[in-house]
Image 1 (cartoon, rainbow, N blue to C red):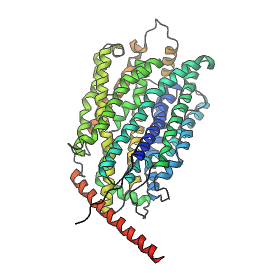
Image 2 (cartoon, helix red, strand yellow; image 1 turned 135 degrees about the horizontal axis):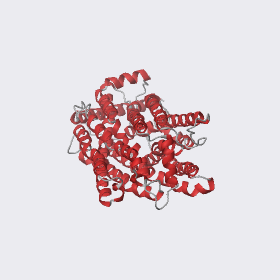
Image 3 (cartoon, rainbow, N blue to C red; image 1 turned 90 degrees about the horizontal axis):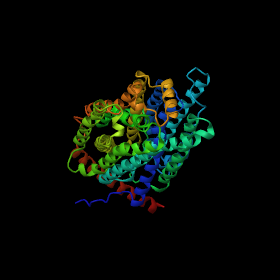
Image 4 (cartoon, rainbow, N blue to C red; image 1 turned 60 degrees about the vertical axis):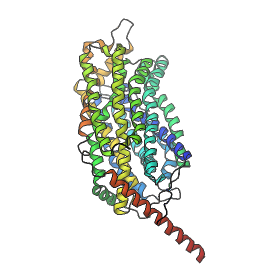
Length: 520
């Protein structure tokens, strides 16, 4: 009878450092992910279609680049391992380039100044550069989870906690960076001569604060964690890895599901303009209050869903939990727009009861999303085990590149959708400048924009974007995974056989080392 082998896994200290780094990394990402599009369109006034074009083109390219980077990670062999070198050396460059995104050459001139070309070109250049450099650490940060432990149980726990801590980092930035920028903008508006100039500098200073803290935490990971799962010395070309992807049916199903779920990304992209213009009217104090109530509802739901996923997996299969968590969110998403349509103009922001209803709706949406996002990571990790069992190769970098590929591609496509929607109702460049000027010159007797008929189409599109497209995305995302091909019981058998193989390989290596020593 074969002796049961103890599985290698991470220490508590490594786990905690990894989670802090995940928190910091997500703080940095959301400085750009949450604030940059708003900064370009609503602060320096680049037209909506140009902004969406820049972000979409950059994200589509970077999504493709993810697989190139994943291939590079899988081909890396160093004394530190295959993922750790990137985690050691990349956080500082990411910090610097993040700050460059918020350094521009003034405001877009609707009268056609030649400076517009430079403003747009710099925005595109810095955004593309950020995505490329960020990817060089993002893929290794996720990929290393499959190398830190041989235990499926420990890996699932780590991925679940990683999503929670990543969500906390994202939430800190999402909830605080815009109110901080608006508050600093108010302080700087008089010294700098205008509210617009104050807001521009407010965003840059806020980026410095949040990025510095995030980079300091992110930097910890590379120096502390260890890679414990043995990696094959054989290196595969990019073409080889594409063949591996195309031959892995469950992985392809996850990728297609993620792409079809693109419209769900709009709730994050459109939340900041919705709070800014409908609820807070660019008041920093109100912005943080409403973001805490509504964005906080999403985050509370997400954290609850992420934390509950390991326990739910004891009762439900990954396939069923993934599919039904998406379908459950359809009704709450759709009800956001219905609530807007059936209430009087501007009433939602002034009614505690309606705010309470919205809070509950956002919690439910976040709960379903939290479960789904953890499952996506664990199912990708399962696909890596499947590939190792089938072909003897662990494509950690390339397969987790698929996760970042989905995040970037869907964000880019969702940005294109939002830009087209804003342009369709005229909520762009000159219209935004006019609305910003109206808000800057409001008196205590002035009507709020949400109370004025001339701004109805702008307020409508903000509610529409966080509601109807995400509801549609939640339905169509389950089409590829409804008959998901990697059954949980099959995966358990695969993992058991892999651990036996790893034990035999380890024993053989120990015997070989012993023989080498004796021969010396």
